[in-house]
Length: 336
Image 1 (cartoon, one colour):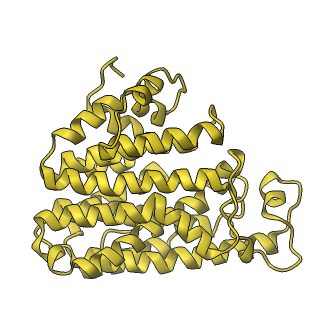
Image 2 (cartoon, one colour):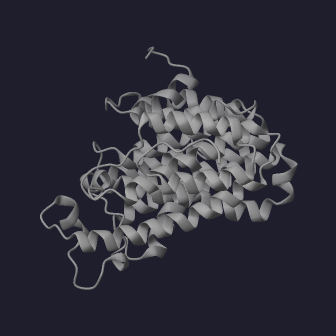
């Protein structure tokens, strides 16, 4: 990676999966969503890094939100971020926060206002949850957390799409609701595939209300001190059912996007299909509490190829989603 990476190089370093879709977008959406993604990766670094205490993270997150809104200069925060030496993709983006912020300030006013509003609100939400700590009592608490880190992203994207896509603007209120559900769908799948990794950094996203009465605490299951396949299955089934409900809303969101805007559809379709596949594999993985579930490169390649050929069809999206769910152990075919 060069000493002064471009924004696109930062994007690809931070997430090859999301970069696949962002690179397919038409301008100016491509550049705008690239910057929005990188802004939130800075927020993610401040929320998730293991080199700071919660008491350090909260004021930094709040400072980043104020800097995004233009309510306060971000110089001191940027100076702090330039010096981070964590060897992670989010740390790399954080070290370049000044360049990301400059790109945000330079974009067209309507898009800048959308991105600033939603990313700053999301960053404040992360600060609230860092202050609150990893206490997920029930599904409502889980949804509250996921809304701050992902549901608001669905709102952000919908507002950006509405600037250029009349079909989204005409159905804006409905699309905002479905967009939030889309974000919750992707985040619920992330929770499932990252159960063990999140526990290692001190967070357990299994709502206590999902644990059967008298069953072991999820921490005991995640650390391996207790093995109870029946309890693990019961918890996993609750999480999978929740994810599938959100994913159905995501499919309805996709159906509204105009077919002739294939790049926009692909940008949304690829993470949806990756999530469907990841969820199918996680459901059949008895070790999901002890290791991260990832789809293989062959699956990614097949999904991208098939979506590029047939993703214009809402009927095909419905059919292919079912195939990805039903064939969890082999790449799904392209068409019926």
